[in-house]
Structure formats: structure tokens, C-alpha cells
Length: 71
Image (cartoon, rainbow, N blue to C red; front, side, top):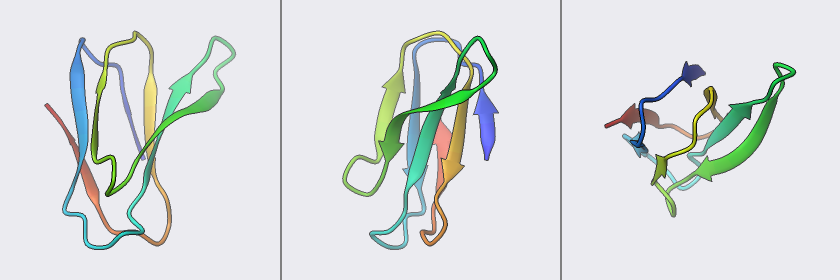
């Protein structure tokens, strides 16, 4: 798990996907310091562009093998 406070826009993507069960959840932090699920990366949707301000957390779901990168 890692957090990102991006300079916009920023592209985030999966890397090193080994199997179809790879999944990373994108969570956005609210004003009460709670994180909420806003998007999911998986082999079918391996990348997205973040354009909204905020603090994001990326969490890999158990079972899949993958990494992430931002560009």
C-alpha cells in the first residue's frame, strides 16, 4: 500500500501482471481522514489518469501478483 498526493494530471498503471486475479484498489481520503473506494485497476483496466485533487491510497488485493507505477 502506498499513498500519492499527485501533481495533475498523473497516470497510474499496473506493471508485471502475472495472472487475471491482479487487482489494485484506488482509495480517496476525505476530510474526516477516512478512505473511500473510487476506482479499481485490473488486467482489463490496467491504467487510469487521476485529474482530481486529493490524497490517494493504492491497495493491492490479496491473491494477485502485480506492481504499480505512475507517469
